[in-house]
Length: 219
Image (cartoon, rainbow, N blue to C red; front, side):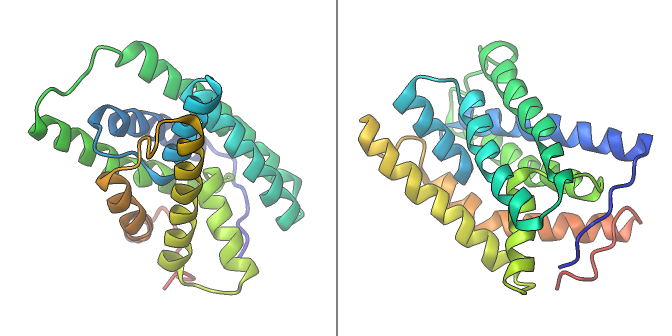
């Protein structure tokens, strides 16, 4: 997979900011559903339970760790720019979770399912928006792209599934240490882990069809 060049424009900046907001909202929707959060958010929640920091703060700490790896692996200082969406998304998650949606509690199974699937659809959509903006993508999307390039593979779905399952495994380990056992790991987490790569690939193809992205390198 080729490295991407940044293109500064009002359109790309707008796409980037909207993608960050959508990701934050989607994370909280999945948290509220109690059906299962995304793979990485199981890790964030376990860290929250273990240390007492907010979910948004845990999100920032984990993402910053991967930012360091991606920056070193790509040998490009531009990836430090991922700090901006990392902090933005972390802060927005806490704003949505602790203030805006604090009273939103889906009380029946149907509403919980609808809430979950809204988050499931929006989270990879927001991540895909960061990718097409030409700026550094969401850190886990950028990590995925980096791993594909390092291992010289175009198997996006396989790489993403391995990433997601690794995060869940670590979340379970930390969850047992924290005394919450499986924490936020639920059936919805498995669904997300197996489908996020498919959704990202689909959204990128969709953006390609409308002329917002070139994705010929992904098969």
